[in-house]
Image 1 (cartoon, helix red, strand yellow):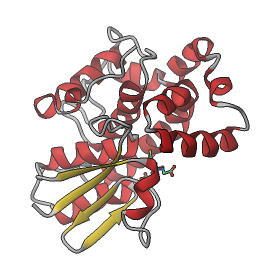
Image 2: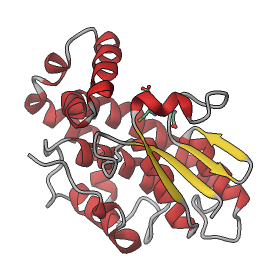
Image 3: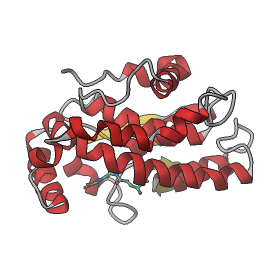
Length: 231
Ligand SMILES: N[C@@H](CCC(=O)N[C@@H](CS)C(=O)NCC(=O)O)C(=O)O
């Protein structure tokens, strides 16, 4: 097997939670490509391929070392064109950029403030020190302060998810009748929350919650096999 995916894990190497790595993992499954997974903690990421990336995911395909989840999805689409398409054509690839920006800016940007302390708690001790230091510097507040008023911010997250809620009245996936990479872009973000935090931010009975469950069922329930964070 020549494809190797480096992902981000907690103290438990079975608990991979990076939203960007989940996007790539789902893209590999969509393409039907076999791959080996290498769960990597925060403080070991720099050793994967320092000349190429300081972040995960990193995908190794033979002698190629790739980083950046969007670039990896495009690489898979262009390198394995005979496999199921991730984008459904060039228009789909261009439109997927909007979904990526929305998922990153509007959804991940809100979710991180609801789970940042919980992420800390699933990390190994040396990663906890690194994570607390870098994130507290980034937020200008303690992890506890950042996450403190998350209940009051649920309505704001629901508003940010409204376009998805409305779309789901007409079709089961962003890709239409079946998922495309657009679905994996948002899915990765919500899977990050599911795996790293017990805080329930999307009602499982809501249209978005049901779409998320459909994504968890894809590829023989692959993503569901990573357990949700325990309360
Ligand atoms: N734009 C990158 C973002 C990747 C990224 O930020 N990954 C995080 C994990 S979710 C990371 O590796 N962080 C390393 C660190 O914080 O030291 C992508 O889409 O792949």
